[in-house]
Image (cartoon, rainbow, N blue to C red; front, side):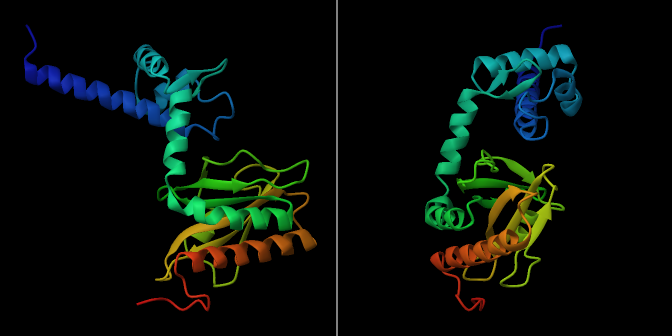
Length: 236
């Protein structure tokens, strides 16, 4: 029995949905599965496809440069990376925040990040200024991190009193401590967070106190740039 145009259209739509779902699974696996990416089995299970079907779909994505195959799995391809950088670069906050991030990083000698909510469960680091310490937390720009149980998640949730920073140790990665403060707009709404990330063994005592102060001051400075009241009063 030959297929009708309507049937063919539905089949094409289902195939497109599968490809997109698979691509999302590959990208969301970044930072979770390590540098090698998710394996074929992990991806197949995540999207509910047979391994043979997933292999064909991944081959199409690889040909388009959207995914790349490693020795152990699949990661975002060169074209996807370029697209991601264009999206991140088009966001207005990183341009405003960069001098502030640079200042915080210079003062603490630790890497400083600007984070925004990606969705209800994750945050994404849009911009960064690297610290000067030999051992530092670098390369997280463009990375998704969980909001639940993390310092950046607390800041983005608006759970912190004005002038305070959240601290989370070993919550995203073992050995990494994050210190985050909320950036609020003219209406008092949290729009971003300024975070310092450093090795847990170094983030205590004076270094931790300095990082707390730096992110709070940095968040307040960015808030003023986007119209927030420096006294913390909310707009109408």
